[in-house]
Image 1: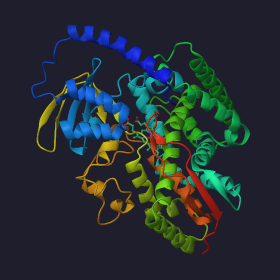
Image 2 (image 1 turned 60 degrees about the horizontal axis):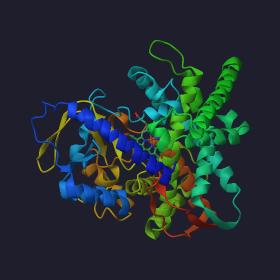
Image 3 (image 1 turned 180 degrees about the vertical axis):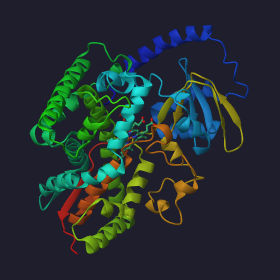
Image 4 (image 1 turned 90 degrees about the horizontal axis):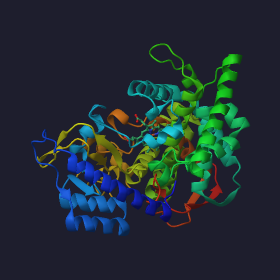
Length: 489
Ligand code: HEM
């Protein structure tokens, strides 16, 4: 999911055509008469030229932060006929996260996902059906259902690291990507896929993923090779999962995985989920969880191994748990890993895999800044909530540029003191991440195992963020040396 220079030129061409079309539309459109308060300041003229230059020379957070310093917490970037209004900071974010679906929603921004997840789910179906399907996924991943996933996840983790030698050097990025796919295939798709067709599943999922590029985002259905490979792979994956579903149904076999929960889900009218719907929902979850989880697992490691104080605290916590429970790790043991939890949460504050969340304003709305200024945001604006800046506000987080997991601990709890929407690495409100507990669970299992069984050292420089990726993550390899060293009770 990387953009090449060809993609960029193609995008420029598309944007130029869009500009002309939009200019004509704007010329015909009337100004929204319902806006009675001032509109947000607009980044234009020299500031716009400065922005275009900054986009090439600086990283995304710096660019947005510079605009925030200059224009305040609400501003509109008007470029090529598109109006994108940024809402920076928790005070102006409530409507973004909590507004009714009829007032603010994802619009057509995710239409390109229809051929990826299928016509039967997500943005291929009406809102009522989509909401019901979201409920199925939410139910399947809610904490009470996750308890039964600890053992299979732990087994995958132990088997994976058992293959490491006594000592060596590895690329954490590669290791965690493979391990998290093994965990997902086992816990989400079930043991049939994990045991009998893991390689085939990875190949097909890779082909579906490679179908996400700048061309397919604008033209999801044109017959280019990557779109065709994506479609063939989805058909094949649907076939594989359909066979698993039919075999479970005909044999009466019931498993403890997410696939089973989706098979057992029922719409309000009593209808069962179809095989195509189940496949679509599973692909959707894999997409939402794959890079977000692997990047967070890597950032957690890079941050920990770069901070002796917090590494020591996380190791100490594991020692105490080993004394208390020996090797036994279950859902409750994971819940006691507070220090590790804060280390992951802090890595995510500084390195959110979704650095900017977007919506479309379907109705005009008003925001009030912390300085008391009110603005009307007109219908039709694209609305951007920059998590990467919101998570780093100086008036909420003390020295936000410093990795300091203690900021979430007792007595400080900076994100809670800062108020709702101060920490949005998992989103919030209507579209809050449904996989948060699942994500913490797998990352804690991986890192608790590593801390209990290895001495580790970061041997490559601390990674920079790769802003060229759709889901920005650590750039390049993240090399770590390891030596086996088992913690004893
Ligand atoms: C550290 C890992 C993860 C991070 C940082 C993360 C982050 C997010 C964020 C920021 C959103 C909100 C998007 C928005 O408001 O537009 C979101 C939504 C979502 N996430 Fe996650 N996610 C993670 C893991 C997962 C996992 C493991 C799953 C599933 C297994 C998952 C499933 C979803 C789904 C289905 C949504 C859409 C919810 C909706 O639109 O109602 N995520 N995630």
